[in-house]
Amino acid sequence: MRRPESLYKYTVEVSPNAWRQMAHLPLATYQRIREELDAVAARMRPETPAPLPQKYVRPVETRSLLVENHIALYEVDPLRKRLTLREIAWCPVQGA
Image (cartoon, rainbow, N blue to C red):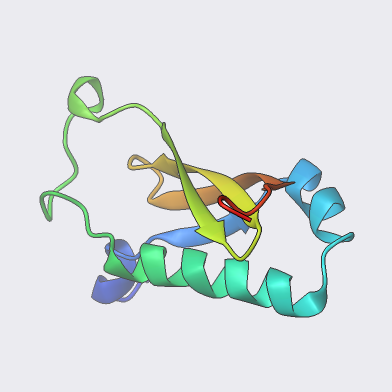
């Protein structure tokens, strides 16, 4: 049986494409991206404690976060309570 708090937690997953991209990153950069995603997941809570009928569940939403010189694109799936890292891209520093 699942513990009650696990019913509300969001998990973080990494797509195969993002794993390939992370293989080219320094370990410290990967760790920072993962820490940021874990922090986002920890702050997320379902809007209501009871599951909503499926027709009322918001669709998957794409968001991004900037870590050092990289942008990480991830999806938020409220139905499965999951964040999925989809892509990591290098972006030049603005104003440099």
